[in-house]
Image (cartoon, rainbow, N blue to C red; front, side, top):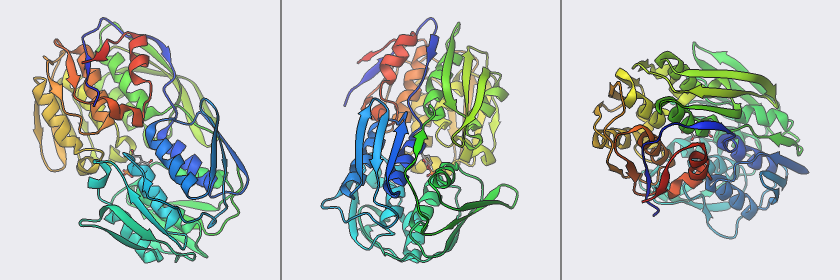
Amino acid sequence: MTALVSGKIDALTGETRVPGDKSISHRALMIGANAVGETRVHGLLEGDDVMATAESLRALGAEITKLADGTWQVFGCGVGGLREPASVLDLRNSGTGARLLMGIVAAHGFTSVFTGDHSLVGRPMERIMAPLRRMGASFVGRSGGRLPLAVTGTDAPLPIVETLKVASAQLKSAILFCGLNSPGVTTVIEPSASRDHTETLLRHFGAKVEVAKEGALGRRIELTGRPELTGQTVTVPADISSAAFPMVAAIIVPGSRVVFREVGLNPLRTGLLTCLEEMGAKVVATNKHYQGGEDYADLEVSSSALKGITVPAERAPAMIDEYPILAAAAACAEGVTRFEGVAELRVKESDRLAAIAQGLAACGVKVQEGEDWLEIHGLGKAPKGGATISTQLDHRIAMSFLVLGMASDKAIAVDDGSPIATSFPGFVPMMNKLGAKIADA
Ligand code: S3P
């Protein structure tokens, strides 16, 4: 455990580039491992989650080498060509790593065993296991469909049509990855569009993926199985879900102005920007461009007076990881901010609704919590602070409260800052370079 403390500061200024997108980094390695020939990834996130995926893919037979900072090489085994791992696959803190890899190994006729850290072994896997069972895989796990668990895959997964109940990119991607080795068309229907990096990258590597609208918000995705995937070059944008932390810091600390370079602005990931705009934050996008199937821009963010808003349930898939940091902004805003339809936050790296509610209350902010909603009574000024927050192995809870500490009257500490390395290695030095005062507690 590494306790950290973040104290009140004058301003954040400068320009920076946050690390590579976590979702795209996992997928680039995984699809590279299913392709034939060389894949080069530029700007890979070297966070612990992605490193856990790289180690597991190596154990499954892919050759993965770091060539330089952020530049990685993958020699894959082709669709259906991975081999049985000699030992347990430990995905540590990574739900994305575990769930997407389960989809991949479910399409191979061998047995693999998955485990993870204290947070991951508490997270629900049944939602992944049910469709993968229908495709032909079998599982033996702990009660409640939790890790550690063993999966025995099949070399010929059935091409299924799966209608998802929750908009989950992890679930969608696991089914599509299993469908890669299916001798037919695998169809996933999602109730509301979730991040589409899997679809974009699969196409980039040569797969046929067709996407159509389904209902008002949903999508129907059809993947033709057994494509010839060939190694490609992938460039990873800076992660909007990581930029979110210093962005909100710059908004709530008076006198700040920070520029973020090359941020990935996939329209299915930008719900936070919509909220911040509605709250009155000054965020200006320049240098907009489109590269490798993804939108990019530089974002110039300045401190702003915020007002409370209602965040509708339909926006949740586009900002599912950004609620903890939006809660820090909402605490400083004038008036009430309400999050609706956010039950999914209870099954993230921690129960995030509970963690936000308890943490904000300890910092002097009134919060009301329901099973799938949260109301934050913003103070219209910086909160009192002066609390130590239990991060519960959740990187985003740790970073959110360290950001809130920068604006609070009294410093805010987190009991364990080590999970930050899962998604945002270098967070503390980067923040301190911009003007933060984060130190070991
Ligand atoms: C992710 C999907 C989301 C998100 C996670 C990354 C992905 O999870 O919370 O951090 O890369 O597919 P769900 O699919 O469970 O919503």
